[in-house]
Image (cartoon, rainbow, N blue to C red):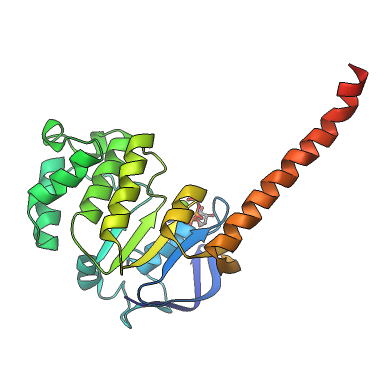
Amino acid sequence: MRIQLQNVSKRFGALVALDDVTLTIPAGARVALAGSNGSGKSTLVRAVVGLTPCRGVTVDGIDPFVDRLSTASRIAYVPQVAPLVGAAVGELVEVVAALRRITPREIRQVAAALGLPIDLVDRRPLRALSGGMKQKLLVALALAAPVSLVVLDEPTASLDASARSVFFDLCRERLSGATVLISSHRPDEVAELADRVVTLSDGRIEDDEPAAAWSARRSAGRTLQHSDARIETRPQEVRA
Ligand SMILES: Nc1ncnc2c1ncn2[C@@H]1O[C@H](COP(=O)(O)OP(=O)(O)OP(=O)(O)O)[C@@H](O)[C@H]1O
Ligand SMILES: [Mg+2]
Protein backbone atom coordinates (compact mmCIF):
# COMPACT_ATOMS: atom_id res chain seq x y z
CA MET A 1 0.00 0.00 0.00
CA ARG A 2 1.23 3.51 -0.80
CA ILE A 3 1.30 6.21 1.85
CA GLN A 4 1.22 9.87 0.85
CA LEU A 5 1.46 12.91 3.12
CA GLN A 6 1.09 16.21 1.30
CA ASN A 7 1.85 19.39 3.29
CA VAL A 8 0.43 17.79 6.44
CA SER A 9 0.14 19.91 9.59
CA LYS A 10 -1.43 18.85 12.87
CA ARG A 11 -2.06 21.11 15.84
CA PHE A 12 -3.20 20.36 19.38
CA GLY A 13 -4.35 23.81 20.49
CA ALA A 14 -1.31 26.07 20.20
CA LEU A 15 1.09 23.13 19.88
CA VAL A 16 2.22 22.20 16.37
CA ALA A 17 2.82 18.43 16.38
CA LEU A 18 3.31 18.11 12.58
CA ASP A 19 4.45 21.07 10.55
CA ASP A 20 4.06 20.97 6.75
CA VAL A 21 5.22 17.37 6.31
CA THR A 22 5.39 16.04 2.74
CA LEU A 23 6.40 12.39 2.44
CA THR A 24 5.81 9.59 -0.05
CA ILE A 25 6.20 5.96 0.99
CA PRO A 26 5.78 3.76 -2.11
CA ALA A 27 4.17 0.32 -1.85
CA GLY A 28 6.72 -2.17 -0.51
CA ALA A 29 9.04 0.49 0.99
CA ARG A 30 10.30 0.12 4.57
CA VAL A 31 10.61 3.44 6.35
CA ALA A 32 11.63 4.23 9.94
CA LEU A 33 10.64 7.44 11.70
CA ALA A 34 13.35 8.69 14.05
CA GLY A 35 13.59 11.82 16.18
CA SER A 36 13.63 12.84 19.82
CA ASN A 37 10.68 12.48 22.24
CA GLY A 38 7.82 14.72 21.21
CA SER A 39 9.10 15.24 17.64
CA GLY A 40 5.81 14.01 16.10
CA LYS A 41 6.45 10.33 15.22
CA SER A 42 3.36 8.87 16.92
CA THR A 43 1.18 11.71 15.65
CA LEU A 44 2.26 10.91 12.07
CA VAL A 45 1.72 7.18 12.65
CA ARG A 46 -1.76 7.75 14.13
CA ALA A 47 -2.69 9.92 11.15
CA VAL A 48 -1.62 7.14 8.74
CA VAL A 49 -3.69 4.46 10.51
CA GLY A 50 -6.76 6.73 10.64
CA LEU A 51 -6.86 7.30 14.40
CA THR A 52 -6.50 11.05 14.15
CA PRO A 53 -8.00 13.29 11.45
CA CYS A 54 -5.34 14.94 9.32
CA ARG A 55 -5.81 16.72 5.99
CA GLY A 56 -3.39 15.64 3.27
CA VAL A 57 -2.88 12.00 4.37
CA THR A 58 -3.87 9.18 2.01
CA VAL A 59 -3.27 5.43 1.98
CA ASP A 60 -3.70 3.99 -1.52
CA GLY A 61 -5.44 7.25 -2.40
CA ILE A 62 -7.98 6.97 0.44
CA ASP A 63 -8.26 9.23 3.52
CA PRO A 64 -7.63 6.69 6.34
CA PHE A 65 -9.67 8.66 8.91
CA VAL A 66 -12.74 8.95 6.67
CA ASP A 67 -12.60 5.28 5.66
CA ARG A 68 -11.46 3.91 9.04
CA LEU A 69 -13.10 0.50 8.88
CA SER A 70 -11.71 -0.52 5.54
CA THR A 71 -8.28 0.90 6.46
CA ALA A 72 -8.22 -0.92 9.82
CA SER A 73 -8.94 -4.26 8.21
CA ARG A 74 -5.99 -3.88 5.82
CA ILE A 75 -3.34 -2.47 8.20
CA ALA A 76 -1.46 -4.26 10.97
CA TYR A 77 -0.82 -1.66 13.67
CA VAL A 78 1.11 -1.93 16.93
CA PRO A 79 0.49 1.24 18.98
CA GLN A 80 3.14 2.70 21.29
CA VAL A 81 0.71 2.55 24.21
CA ALA A 82 -1.98 -0.14 24.43
CA PRO A 83 -5.54 1.19 24.45
CA LEU A 84 -7.17 1.10 27.91
CA VAL A 85 -9.83 -1.38 26.88
CA GLY A 86 -11.68 -3.43 29.50
CA ALA A 87 -12.29 -6.37 27.11
CA ALA A 88 -10.73 -9.68 28.11
CA VAL A 89 -7.69 -10.93 26.20
CA GLY A 90 -9.61 -13.96 24.86
CA GLU A 91 -12.39 -11.72 23.50
CA LEU A 92 -9.87 -9.47 21.75
CA VAL A 93 -8.24 -12.48 20.13
CA GLU A 94 -11.65 -13.68 18.84
CA VAL A 95 -12.60 -10.25 17.45
CA VAL A 96 -9.27 -9.63 15.70
CA ALA A 97 -9.19 -13.17 14.28
CA ALA A 98 -12.67 -12.62 12.76
CA LEU A 99 -11.63 -9.21 11.35
CA ARG A 100 -8.49 -10.71 9.79
CA ARG A 101 -10.26 -13.90 8.64
CA ILE A 102 -7.87 -16.21 10.52
CA THR A 103 -8.44 -18.60 13.42
CA PRO A 104 -7.86 -17.49 17.04
CA ARG A 105 -5.36 -20.37 17.22
CA GLU A 106 -3.07 -18.61 14.73
CA ILE A 107 -2.89 -15.55 17.03
CA ARG A 108 -2.36 -17.76 20.09
CA GLN A 109 0.56 -19.52 18.35
CA VAL A 110 2.33 -16.23 17.57
CA ALA A 111 1.75 -15.01 21.15
CA ALA A 112 3.14 -18.28 22.54
CA ALA A 113 6.25 -17.95 20.36
CA LEU A 114 6.78 -14.47 21.84
CA GLY A 115 6.52 -15.96 25.35
CA LEU A 116 2.90 -15.06 26.15
CA PRO A 117 0.78 -18.18 26.77
CA ILE A 118 -2.66 -16.67 26.18
CA ASP A 119 -4.45 -19.54 27.94
CA LEU A 120 -3.06 -18.23 31.22
CA VAL A 121 -4.40 -14.69 30.69
CA ASP A 122 -7.53 -15.44 28.64
CA ARG A 123 -9.96 -13.86 31.08
CA ARG A 124 -7.84 -10.93 32.20
CA PRO A 125 -8.69 -7.51 30.78
CA LEU A 126 -6.00 -6.15 28.42
CA ARG A 127 -5.38 -3.20 30.74
CA ALA A 128 -4.44 -5.59 33.59
CA LEU A 129 -1.45 -7.09 31.70
CA SER A 130 2.10 -5.87 32.31
CA GLY A 131 3.65 -3.50 29.74
CA GLY A 132 5.67 -6.26 28.06
CA MET A 133 2.73 -8.71 28.06
CA LYS A 134 0.51 -6.08 26.39
CA GLN A 135 3.17 -5.46 23.77
CA LYS A 136 3.50 -9.19 23.05
CA LEU A 137 -0.26 -9.49 22.61
CA LEU A 138 -0.42 -6.42 20.35
CA VAL A 139 2.42 -7.78 18.20
CA ALA A 140 0.68 -11.19 17.97
CA LEU A 141 -2.64 -9.54 17.00
CA ALA A 142 -0.86 -7.49 14.33
CA LEU A 143 1.45 -10.09 12.80
CA ALA A 144 -0.67 -13.27 12.89
CA ALA A 145 -2.33 -12.55 9.52
CA PRO A 146 -0.68 -11.47 6.26
CA VAL A 147 -1.26 -7.77 5.47
CA SER A 148 0.12 -5.34 2.92
CA LEU A 149 0.83 -2.44 5.33
CA VAL A 150 2.45 -2.81 8.75
CA VAL A 151 2.68 0.21 11.07
CA LEU A 152 4.75 -0.27 14.23
CA ASP A 153 5.15 2.42 16.90
CA GLU A 154 8.21 1.46 18.98
CA PRO A 155 7.16 -2.19 18.85
CA THR A 156 9.95 -3.70 20.97
CA ALA A 157 10.37 -0.96 23.59
CA SER A 158 8.99 -3.14 26.44
CA LEU A 159 9.97 -6.58 25.12
CA ASP A 160 12.51 -8.78 26.88
CA ALA A 161 15.58 -9.88 24.87
CA SER A 162 14.19 -13.26 23.84
CA ALA A 163 10.83 -11.82 22.72
CA ARG A 164 12.70 -9.15 20.75
CA SER A 165 14.67 -11.82 18.90
CA VAL A 166 11.46 -13.81 18.13
CA PHE A 167 9.83 -10.55 16.96
CA PHE A 168 12.63 -10.00 14.42
CA ASP A 169 12.30 -13.63 13.22
CA LEU A 170 8.54 -13.13 12.76
CA CYS A 171 9.12 -9.93 10.79
CA ARG A 172 11.65 -11.69 8.53
CA GLU A 173 9.13 -14.50 7.87
CA ARG A 174 5.97 -12.43 7.49
CA LEU A 175 6.75 -8.95 6.21
CA SER A 176 8.38 -9.66 2.88
CA GLY A 177 6.76 -7.45 0.25
CA ALA A 178 4.73 -5.44 2.78
CA THR A 179 4.99 -1.68 3.17
CA VAL A 180 6.51 -1.01 6.62
CA LEU A 181 6.33 2.20 8.64
CA ILE A 182 8.04 1.98 12.01
CA SER A 183 8.71 4.60 14.65
CA SER A 184 11.84 3.78 16.62
CA HIS A 185 14.67 4.99 18.84
CA ARG A 186 16.42 1.63 18.61
CA PRO A 187 19.26 1.10 16.08
CA ASP A 188 18.60 -2.69 16.07
CA GLU A 189 14.95 -2.17 15.01
CA VAL A 190 15.92 0.30 12.31
CA ALA A 191 18.67 -1.96 10.93
CA GLU A 192 16.32 -4.98 10.85
CA LEU A 193 13.15 -3.37 9.56
CA ALA A 194 13.92 -0.24 7.53
CA ASP A 195 15.73 0.70 4.33
CA ARG A 196 15.16 4.41 4.78
CA VAL A 197 15.05 6.70 7.84
CA VAL A 198 13.04 9.91 8.07
CA THR A 199 14.08 12.03 11.06
CA LEU A 200 11.53 14.42 12.55
CA SER A 201 12.38 17.46 14.64
CA ASP A 202 9.64 19.64 16.14
CA GLY A 203 7.13 18.14 13.70
CA ARG A 204 9.21 18.84 10.58
CA ILE A 205 11.29 16.50 8.41
CA GLU A 206 14.92 17.14 9.30
CA ASP A 207 16.54 14.28 7.34
CA ASP A 208 15.45 11.62 4.87
CA GLU A 209 18.27 9.16 4.15
CA PRO A 210 19.14 5.49 3.56
CA ALA A 211 19.11 3.46 6.81
CA ALA A 212 22.82 2.62 6.37
CA ALA A 213 23.71 6.35 6.28
CA TRP A 214 21.59 7.00 9.41
CA SER A 215 23.31 4.15 11.30
CA ALA A 216 26.77 5.32 10.21
CA ARG A 217 26.04 8.88 11.40
CA ARG A 218 24.84 7.58 14.77
CA SER A 219 27.92 5.42 15.34
CA ALA A 220 30.19 8.30 14.23
CA GLY A 221 28.39 10.58 16.75
CA ARG A 222 28.89 8.04 19.54
CA THR A 223 32.61 7.61 18.78
CA LEU A 224 33.05 11.39 18.85
CA GLN A 225 31.24 11.64 22.21
CA HIS A 226 33.48 8.91 23.66
CA SER A 227 36.67 10.58 22.48
CA ASP A 228 35.45 13.95 23.88
CA ALA A 229 34.87 12.22 27.24
CA ARG A 230 38.45 10.85 27.18
CA ILE A 231 39.86 14.33 26.52
CA GLU A 232 37.83 15.81 29.41
CA THR A 233 39.10 13.22 31.92
CA ARG A 234 42.76 13.45 30.90
CA PRO A 235 43.81 16.40 33.19
CA GLN A 236 42.47 14.54 36.24
CA GLU A 237 44.31 11.38 35.21
CA VAL A 238 47.55 13.41 34.94
CA ARG A 239 46.99 14.96 38.40
CA ALA A 240 46.36 11.51 39.91
N1 LIG B 1 -3.73 14.05 21.93
C1 LIG B 1 -2.82 15.03 22.14
N2 LIG B 1 -3.18 16.17 22.75
C2 LIG B 1 -2.29 17.17 22.95
N3 LIG B 1 -1.00 17.11 22.55
C3 LIG B 1 -0.59 16.00 21.95
C4 LIG B 1 -1.47 14.90 21.71
N4 LIG B 1 -0.78 13.93 21.08
C5 LIG B 1 0.48 14.39 20.95
N5 LIG B 1 0.59 15.63 21.45
C6 LIG B 1 1.81 16.45 21.48
O1 LIG B 1 2.35 16.45 20.16
C7 LIG B 1 3.78 16.40 20.21
C8 LIG B 1 4.26 15.21 19.42
O2 LIG B 1 3.89 14.03 20.15
P1 LIG B 1 4.18 12.56 19.60
O3 LIG B 1 3.50 11.62 20.51
O4 LIG B 1 3.81 12.52 18.16
O5 LIG B 1 5.77 12.49 19.75
P2 LIG B 1 6.75 11.24 19.50
O6 LIG B 1 7.79 11.68 18.50
O7 LIG B 1 5.98 10.03 19.18
O8 LIG B 1 7.45 11.11 20.93
P3 LIG B 1 7.99 9.80 21.72
O9 LIG B 1 9.37 9.50 21.17
O10 LIG B 1 8.06 10.26 23.14
O11 LIG B 1 7.00 8.69 21.53
C9 LIG B 1 4.16 16.37 21.69
O12 LIG B 1 4.48 17.69 22.10
C10 LIG B 1 2.89 15.89 22.38
O13 LIG B 1 2.79 16.38 23.69
MG1 LIG C 1 5.73 8.21 20.09
